[in-house]
Every structure is written in C-alpha cells, then in structure tokens.
Image 1 (tube, rainbow over the protein chains, first blue to last red):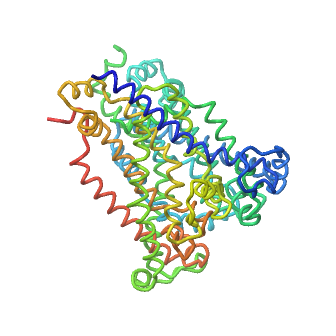
Image 2 (image 1 turned 120 degrees about the vertical axis):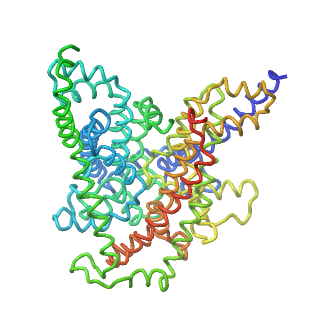
Image 3 (image 1 turned 90 degrees about the vertical axis):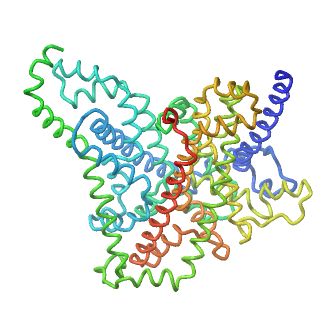
Length: 277
Length: 308
C-alpha cells in the first residue's frame, strides 16, 4: 500500500525537479551562450543555442570596454577591508553579548534587533551628509569604515555560536592567566572558525554585489566597483548584448567559483543563523 | 577550581565591576557605531523631515509641510507606495510558496540533492546588477529568449514585459523567483530538522500526506516561515536596485517603487528634507506591517518545547 505510490512519487518528484532545474539553469545558459556569440548570431531567428563559431574574443573586448581589472581591484579592496572590519568588530561585540555578564548587555542586544528592522532609507540621508561633512565622498571610506563598527546580523549570528562553546574552556584559560581578549583570540575564535568563515564569506559577497553604496559614494570613474561600472556600461552600450553578457559573466564568475570552493560554509551559514530555535 | 573559588564571595563585586568594564569595552565598536550610524541619523532624519534641506545649506524649518506635500500633492508618492505594496502583497507570497515547494521537493532523500541545491541557490548570490542585465535581455520583447520560447509554443501576442506597464511588475516578480533559492535553503535546513518519527506517527494515526504536511510539517516550519516573511517584508519595502538598473521606474511609472522615488528626490532633486519625510513614512509602514505579522504569529507559529 505504501511502497507502490512511493515509487510513483519519486518519479514525479524527479520529473518536476528536472523541469524546474532546467528553467533555473536556462538564464545561466543563455548568459554564457550570448556572451560567446558573434553579433549576427545574437539576433538570429530562430535563436542559436550553441554559438558557432565560439567568439572567445568577446571577453577581452568586453574587458576593454569596461576597465574590468581596475574595477575588480577596486571592488576587491573594499571587500577585503569590509571582511576584516566586520569579522573583528562583530567578534568583539558577540563576545561581550555571549560570554560576559554585564548590565546593559540586554540593551545592546535589543538595539541589534531594532537595527535589523530599520529601513536603510531612514539613515541614508544623514549618513550621506555626515560623510560629506567629513569630505569622504569619492573615497572608499564610507563603504568600509562602518564595517569596523559591527553588523547587527553577524553579531547576532556569532553570539548564537559563541554561546554554544562550553564555559569551562573560558574558565580554564582564565585560570591559566588569560585576559578576555586572549580568551577570545585563542579559545573562542579558533573554535568558532566555521561561523567566522560564514560571516567573512557573506560580507565578501555582500560587498562584491553592493550597488547602492558605491552609487552614493563613488563619483569618480577611476574608483568604480564592478557593480557600478557594469550599470554605467549598460547605460552607455545599451544594445550590445554579447558585450553586456560577457561583462556580466565575468562579474558573476568569481561568486560561482567561491561558492564551489566554500559550499559547506554557505550551507552551514544557513543553519547557523540561529533561526531554527 | 580551588584557586578560582577561594575568594569568590569577597571578590564578587570586583568581578562584577571587571565584567562590566570588559563587556562595555568589547561592545564599544557597536555602541559607537550605533550612536554615529543609527541613533544620530534617526534623529537627524526626523529633523530634516521637518525642514527644507538641499544637503548643502542649513536646513530651514518648515514644520509638517513635507508631510502635507507628500500625502496631499505628490501623486507619485501614492503610485510608488501602491507599486511597492504590489510587490509585498503579491510578489512576496508567490516567492515564499515557490521556495517552500522547491525545498519540499528537495527534502525527499533523492539522488542529486546537492546538485539541485547548488543550482537553485546560485542565482540568489549572483550580483543583482548582473542578474538585472541578464533578465533585461531575457525579457526583451522582440529578441529575448522568453518571448522566442513563447512564440515557439504558439503564443502570438506575447507580453512586452518590462516595456508594458501592465506586465512590468509581473516581470520583476518572475525574475525574483529565480532568486528564490536564498529562502529555499533556509526552509530546507529547517525541513531536515523535522523529526521523521513525528511524520510517521501522523501516518500511523491515519493522516494522509497532505494532512501530515498541514498538521506536522507546517507547524514545525512555522518559525522559519515567520523569519522569511519578516525578512521578505522588510526587503520588499526597500525594492530598489533592479528597478534602478532595468527600468528607471518606467514605463509610465509602473515600476516606480518607493525606495526609487525616495532616492530620486534625495539625490536627483536634492530635496533631502522631503526624502527624509518619505523615509519616515516608510519606516512607519514597515514597522506597522512587521508588528501586525509578529502579533499574528502568536496564533500560527509553533515553538518546539513551549507547549503546555
């Protein structure tokens, strides 16, 4: 009674998954396919699925149109500084919330939750005028400096993880003469490596993909990030689809590569967000 | 143990003082950051919202005039609010259902699960700008892949998608579904925590698959559904980048979303006081919706171990 339908069910499930999977992969396929086509094939009817000949030189051409290497380096610099700042600051604050008993920590905790539901638009304009007053517009400082002051989501995530580390380990280190900073650096952070990797990874991807920040603060073409460079590229070369797809592919590729190398960290990150209980 | 415990009582208050210092010191980055990048901007933006302010000259107090203009004169305010609510009320539930269905399909202990999970997750971490450009191409009314495929199955008057005001928001919602993998993996992680014994017990009690899903799986998932709902709600109210890159709010303001209208007022017209008033209205609407959802959640969210 139960066996027979379960085979049918497996077949149906697989059928649907193959179908949905095909739909989900189609945009990626079309992205790469268009990126490798000659202009005549881009517009051909009926559509050409596999480009022939494969125009590899679309990529160097697209990288000339948009100074990709420079934009990539600009983006990487922002990513690296954001990752360092976020991991350090969130670690400190999470330690304070998870491992130290002090009056005021509930207040700090509630301020985290409050920030999570605060729309960025509310703080956007005063923050902009503040950075303007500091003469930071046109530099990367508005994009990286705030990460040194913690991020509500990641503090929350690390706090959840730090709480699961046995108190005995801290006590033992303290008896050996460790200060709190030493306990954090030598006991907690090594044990929290998966959580820290998740925070670093998500921060990196967030900075790589960020659009509004660079749009607000980078006004000099030489300092553009990939996101803003690519958007400007669209408004200038509207209809050159093979160039646009080549440029989009090159911007997406690092994210895909990172995902394949750090797949476990991504999936762990989902479990770590602490929303499950 | 001995060493630490010997003077415990006499050192109690010293320890409390030391812990307070340590806690405060370690939390300092956040406390400073919160003051400078959250508390001050909240106050300043409330003040700006009551002023005429171009971002350069000193703000000039005009009382509630910005709010009056917003509510009574700015048609685009209402238009953009309606467009945004469309994404919240229609786009968000569709996205949540699709990602839950995919997660349920993947939770069947099937072969190739990792492969599918990767495939469905990747679009959600693809840079939004790249995604937007790609879908601009896919949605192209004449030569885009979507309409070519529709024509090949015999659809004659395929929609103009982003060029047609009646279809533009649907197009953005469809594109959003491609990114459903982000919440899908969250559902999937939660589904893998649903004890199989509970589902089997329901079957033994005579529950069919649909009943077991409704009365076992959904309650066990409800905290995660709430999480995705609240996050989705907050995100949908701030829908921006896709519209900025793909349509700039058009055609005929059909994709002029609230955050885009606000951005344009602040950084195209430099009406920063007015934009601040808009930001506060957004804050209030978001807060009200979140509060309603959280209040209702007492009735439909089940927390394991909380039941009497």
